[in-house]
Image (cartoon, rainbow, N blue to C red; front, side):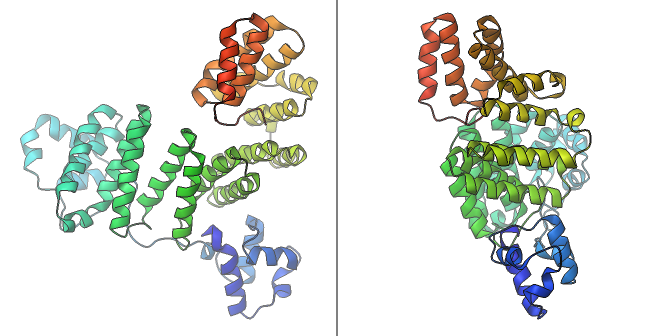
Length: 430
């Protein structure tokens, strides 16, 4: 796993009786290698490729993968509990399962398969019939809880997967309390049946991180995920671990521990790039810049941005999100003329709603500072709803303060004071 990669390099080097100097070559200095081997520094992909070549092992050697068979939303094959439903589900014939229930319910009821209501609920969910998925999934969960220990142990993965799907449904319904309840229940039973190293347990913890981040429970995010990483030092799912590091990145910068935040986002970027998931890597680069600017390290933030520009072709055309980020950096450093000039280059039809809201807020606040109140009010109001939905309390406090000065409406003054006391999420203001 990424947290122990340095120890693995050190142990293998010593086994091969290679001294640090011989391993370094031209690409890595002894100081850097020492920091890597003591887990104080994460090697770049180029450095890790070089080290793996020198030690004559594939780069995958440094990442441990599990050997047991489980999947995201499938209980897997079970020779003691197989049925036509399982076969259809494994082959993604979800419509067959749904049609059987709708056209021949008696035949469905007669099938002896402990997981049949899981297959039905998951099929409804997968085909977008969210509300129809809830009842069979709950029935599966109730059957599991009432079952003897041996049946629970045999079907723990389908149980956890069903709870994970219900979590997703509750999040869509904005019922975060129930969403958390389902994940905690899955976590508890996976622990009870020694399945903490399973893929579904990684998914459950990753989703807990997302849930707690969205509800501004940053200390809870850190507690749950740091404990989880410590417990699972020797196991890793390369497509899931970076999501956990990303949640920790966000949690740490929201409580002001910026160095830890930066450390986690670097790990996330490394793993996303290693697995070839460059879309998430781009998002992490934005988070890296955010963590730096929240820590008032604006020069380093600009450096990261400039480095990104150099390695990405057609930067302005293909990555308008980064143009918004560059605009925010100029705004944070009071370079308002540069921010306004950059705003003229940005094509808003190619950015998401949040980036548009940030764009409008910056224009609104700069116009406010320039006493152009009509323009300021128009832009500020265009960002208000998104900021409310995202719980950006710091930005909302400033937004309402501007609107109060512009309009004299005391409602805005009260809202500004209210949001100034709320612990929300960081966004534009540092």
